[in-house]
Image (cartoon, rainbow, N blue to C red; front, side, top):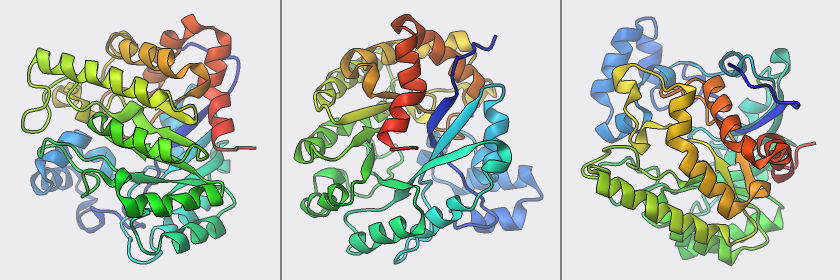
Length: 356
């Protein structure tokens, strides 16, 4: 049963891509085999590293275009008014190539779907010598550009997919020096690191109290729900330890009052979910049972004024439908009152990304 909210939702974390027409890791395979989806899936499963497969679960949704009409179909019957596109690992990374994603997103037909593009979070790495030029190019490409994401996710378990070749990118002295430019240009930072790297995020936040920072996906505690990689989350004792350490480390991060958090991404396979292996989807009751401890702790340490609901679609759709995710999160947050619901599902995202 769909739980209605007395306001329109703002979703501050979705991804858009089109492997047929934009730089994409699987663009060649998609163009050659796109008419044969089963063959394409088999080739992708055989060709991709196991760590990548463990991260995405299934390949079909990553190999198909995900555009405004697809998102609107996924979120129906909920009324999502505004979205924020967060960089989707654009693969033309030479020179200013990543800025092409900001230009491409800006021209997508969101309005035709009665959906508003409220902000764009672009890709930029402070370790890139051209970082200053890339920031200026992003800002010139769209007035909706609000900040950057530089993924630092790198796990001690070599069997877990690394989104950054550096284990501690956020503490690199060069990274820290160039990061100062975000404050100069009044830009925000989406941090994505695994929970094993939360100390790095806290270190970064302490150096830049004037920069608005949000930790994506509550720092993705890999293996907290089941085995991942070579040896993460293999036993219940290990999983309990991952959860306990996550609680302590994210509470420490939350002490930095300029840091916000997205309640998102908790259904990605890399956390140890196995629904996709059985070709099943988690229902509302199951989602509530799995995620309530995380949501309650996040509200305890951040407070409802620094949390944002976000869908992370389509990355979580291998585990659950978006309406079921929204229904479950409404149920989990409702005990905190209507003001908390409005803040987490709408107002906090509007304020953080300065959406008019």
